[in-house]
Length: 339
Image 1 (cartoon, helix red, strand yellow):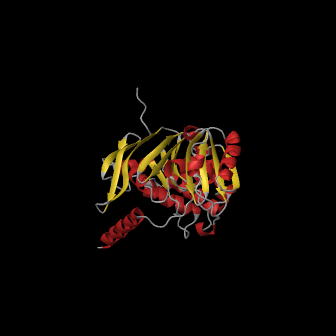
Image 2 (cartoon, rainbow, N blue to C red):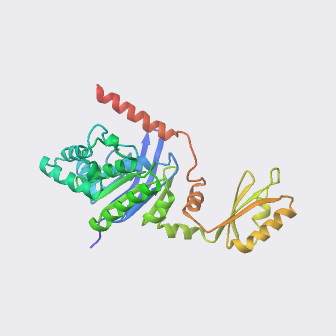
């Protein structure tokens, strides 16, 4: 008997305004009970993909299946089976923690009595019982994230979507939040789909990862599998200002797989960094370029991201065409709703 995937994305496409192709043929599966990381640069299509999977956006093409339910066929049933926690604060600061959870329960058709019982249990589970009757705006960042997690779990979803859930939290807050998630996963079999800008979280918390760039999936696998795809070591060499380009000098050296250069810094993927470094320094010196710095690293998720997207993971970027299209669609939808 074939196991039903928790999430099945098949050739998802989303086109905004007839020309901005935000998501371009995305396909992947998420297994029941796993933590699945979804990484990509700003504007790569992460938010649009999550919105299609969680029944917030209708795809232009393709299909999404959540726990055996077609999102396009029965979006309301899908919403009852998932929880979504956004990076923006969603708790109402003018309500108490308890009231936030009880209001959310009512939105899912849960009776007032049952909502009170679940709120009490969730606050105890999230260790915010002492602050239950305080206004949420008085909570610390970590307490507020735990409250939002409780709100997202009040209807007992089978699948949880987390969009940058620990953004802005200190290391202790991040560790505490993930501790709760792992406990829920182990005790209740919760499936977690997460986007994050903390690669250490993705490396340690995710069973598998997909990297999206320019609307397409460029790599999928466990953190270990993705790092193994790079092979060998990563050597970074910096040359003195004004030195000639060393790409042609470094590429023919023994054990070199590839060379990328930018502003006098060379990222060399090679079989083994230890024997390569003295060869590289000598070759550069002979070619008239003094080497001012050398580092050798085993492949990391940062290196994986750079390899598949050509960009640093934390690179700051301005609004993309996709960002502007999504914003415009939201504004237009809001204006239509007021008419």
